[in-house]
Image (cartoon, rainbow, N blue to C red; front, top):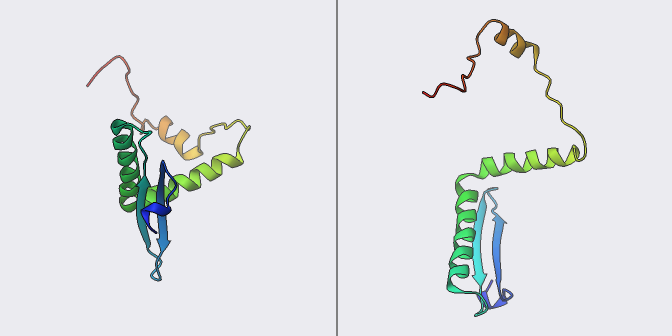
Length: 105
C-alpha cells in the first residue's frame, strides 16, 4: 500500500496473516497541515505504541479481547461476586493475610 492511498489525517494498523499463522503488523499514516506538529507526534506515538504492544503483548491483547466480549454478554446485568468454598475455607483457616490499611510497610 502506498502512503498516498491513505486518506488525509488517517492512520492504518494492518495485520497480515502469514502462511505460518503468525501476524505481520504494519503501520502507516498520512497527516496534512491541519494538524500541529505536537498532534502529529502524539498520534505517531500512539500508532507505534499500539504496534509495539501488539508485537510483544499479543497474548494479553487476545485475552483482553475475550474479556471485553464476555463483558458485552453481561451488558445491563449486575455482576455479583460469590466466593468459592475453597476461598471461604482459606479465610477461615487464616491462610489469607489481612491488609491493615492503617499501617504502611
